[in-house]
Every structure is written in structure tokens, then in C-alpha cells.
Image 1 (cartoon, protein in one colour):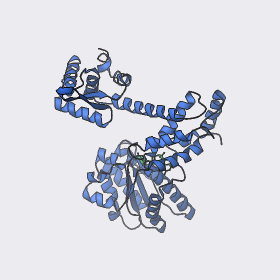
Image 2: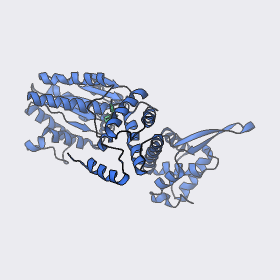
Image 3: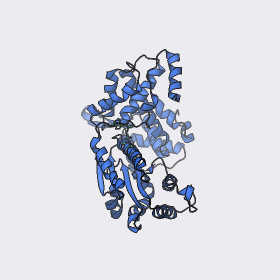
Image 4: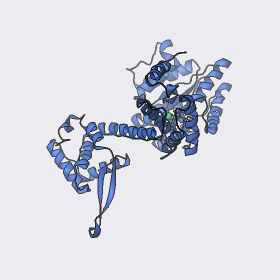
Length: 405
Ligand SMILES: Nc1ncnc2c1ncn2[C@@H]1O[C@H](COP(=O)(O)OP(=O)(O)OP(=O)(O)O)[C@@H](O)[C@H]1O
Ligand SMILES: [Mg+2]
């Protein structure tokens, strides 16, 4: 089978004489390897919980927790795919819609996707249209359909915390209570995936207790585990000899710096390969990984700054323009920038808060400066290159003229 990857490879080989990557899609975020090392226990727990459906009974609701990049989505996708193969094999009718509440950025669209997956819109007069119903009515139509058809449903909601942040837990309440109201036959089990460990605190106690009939926590990978995961990924993604072991180890070390994040490590691998190809290197090495890290950081900071509120942008600009960098001076530069732009400045307290938010995002740092017998003082500075700050801010017309002035 010839894919776009293969075509790309042909062109790249021709252009450089030697291609580094042999299977580009295995480095993308959508690719899920068939084997997930170090996730046997989690896979077994999930498979066991879901296997109840093969006996015709309702699996427990289940919550999966874990920091970003710990394999939650990958494990669920693999287990669900295998489950579907088995149910097809045995001729058992189950529906397993998987929706991502963050990508599907409205609660109504979550319901729409569930309805589409179950086939409601093809079969029923009472459809769940793309828009136009109340949330309550849309939920009811889904539940009525499940009951009428006596469907066995495992509903997977990935990034479930963003659904609750945006729309509260009404939908979850309806789905978790539905089974009590449903006559014998149909049922819905809920699998929720969240990378926020405090997610449960946001739920109504009734929803909390029924949603977490069972719970599984995914621990971060160790650097050594990341190294093995990456080595395997590199084996299928790169041509032989196209990546140095040292580069793989560095990706693993960087992916494990905050917490063992496989996504971050694989992103580094992909971007490093892109950079190496761009300069027509014959091998991906450590310097490409370092450059990749810089590029990813720069791209992220740029996005955050570009989408920041106007006052956060004023504060950022003030930090770059302040000479002493102490809080008082930053505030006075900030105030004068606001006046120049004919905007009302926020209080000093609020500005201090904004600075500490920027600090948490890693966009600013505070140096302690020793001033001899005058004691010590703090100097706030941006950790992001000034060119990146300028690029991100000048897209906003308020700042276009302030930046150089
Ligand atoms: N054990 C593993 N073996 C191989 N690849 C893995 C493993 N765990 C995760 N990955 C890969 O790492 C990336 C991130 O994993 P995944 O998307 O499952 O993380 P997640 O826990 O869902 O993170 P988030 O909370 O940010 O959604 C994916 O590309 C996935 O294929
Ligand atoms: Mg995920």
C-alpha cells in the first residue's frame, strides 16, 4: 500500500540522497502502537472491567487518572479496539463511542458525537441534530434510544475535566443515573479519563460516587522506561543508523524532566528529525534534540503570549522595558504603557498576581540580586527571547506601536 508517507519518502530520498525517517506517521500524535510496555497492569484492569459486557452485564463505571503523556488515551484506545474485535467475532452488539471533550469544544457537540456514533441520526425521527436542541432534550433522546434498542453502551469521555469545567456535571449526572431509570435490557457504562487529579472535587457527590465505582491511576514513566519506549518507537520510525542512541537518551531525559511524559519525549523525537532533515544531516543527534526542545518551547511561549489578555501583554511589555526589573518599577512602566494606550491600569496587587501567573507558566524568572550592603533585591525578567515577545505582541494592534517606542 502506498501512502503519502511513502511518496514523501521518495521525494526526500531524491532530495537528500538519504532519508532519515521511514515511517513518518509513527511519530505523530494519532499513532497508537499495538504494544504499550509498562502499562500491563493498567491494560489488564481496564480489560477486566470491560469484559463484563461480553457476559451481557453492565461494566462498572471507571475513572482513569494520570499526568499528561502517561498513556491513558493510548491504553483505552487499544483495549477498546480489541474489545470491538471480540464482540464482532462473537456477534455481540455493543456500542463504544469515544469522545474527546477538549477537542469537541462544546458540551452539545459531545452529545451530538455520541448520537452519531450510536446511529441515532440515521434511524430515528427524533434526531440529535448538530444544533438546535436543549442539552436536556438531547440527553433524553440518547437515553430513550438506548432503552428502546436495549443497547449495551460503554461511553468513553476523554479529557472529561474540560467538559465539567465548561458545563458542570449535568450531563454526567444524567448518564450515571440513567441505569436506575432504565428498564431491564439497555445500559450505559461510563469511562472517564482525566489528567487532573483534583477533577473529582468538582463533581456533585452523587455523580462522584457513581462515576468512580472503580479508579485507576497511571503513574509517570521513569526516564529509563521512556528510553525503552523511545528506542522501540525509533526502531519503527527511522531508517537504520539514522538516529544516534545519545539522541534517544536525551529525548527520554528531557521527557522525564518534570514528570515522565511520553508525549513530550516523542514530540522531541519528531521535531528533532524534522530539523535534522531540514539541514540534510545524515543522522539525528543530540544537537538536533536540543534545537527541537528550543523550538517547542518557543512555539509554546509564542502561543501563550499571543493569546494572553491585554493586561498580561502590558505587563510582559513592561517587564522587557523596565530597567531595574523590580516590582515597583515594572508597575510604573506598566501604568505608563496603559496610559499611552488610553487604558485604565489594574491595581499593583493584580499586576503582582499576573507576574506570578507568568512565573508559573515559566515565561518569567526572578533573579535575586545582591547589592552589597544595600541588601538584596529581586529582578524580574522574561525567560522568552525578546524577538518572540515582539512577534507575539505585535499581532495585537494595541501593541504594534508600543513595542519599539
Ligand atoms: N507505554 C507506552 N509505550 C509506547 N508509547 C506510549 C506509551 N505510553 C504512551 N505512549 C505514547 O505517548 C504519547 C502520549 O500518550 P497518551 O496520549 O496516551 O497520553 P495521555 O495519558 O492520554 O496524556 P493526556 O493526559 O495529555 O491526554 C502517545 O503518542 C502514545 O502513543
Ligand atoms: Mg489523553
